Image 1 (cartoon, helix red, strand yellow):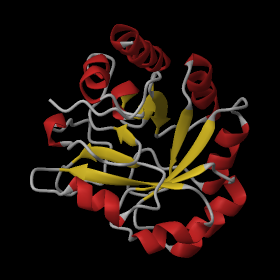
Image 2: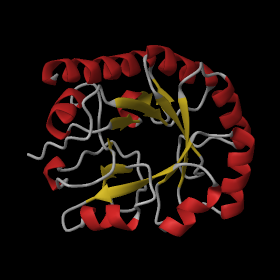
Image 3: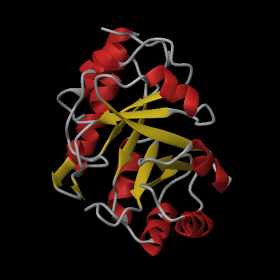
Length: 218
């Protein structure tokens, strides 16, 4: 199994798909480093620009706001960025590197991992990204499926931070951290009581799992 030397610190934790200020604040106080706001209408976790701003305004200092888009209209992204002022953009579709870099914000690129994908070449193609978010390939779904992928498909030698996603929850995140050693982990459905509805207890359990895994390998 690959063990990537991407971080010698506790992995950063992003709770994605938050839809209300109260739960976002809860995630931050539980120890999340970042929260993700989904601007993709087909998703049950979609928020409007006004909702996104209200959630961002509810966060304490030093918690990053990540805005997630899937092949979005350029004007919509500009409007979202102008009004919400996210710290980081996450592109989860088939966006080109040129598309991703045009908005004047740091960005990461999501990739749905499957056998046969050349992740080293993918990382090279998106060299301007601050990191790669590795998610599971599920045909017809952009993400948020709750499915894991084969972590052995991650090659060594990717020269940028890796954010591990895809089917993580409190029961498997410690193993994921030990085996992959990512820069960060990202969770959405794994901390929900129902689709699109986060659970404060599951968020806390997930964060404890991440920190427990790091204690074991440090």
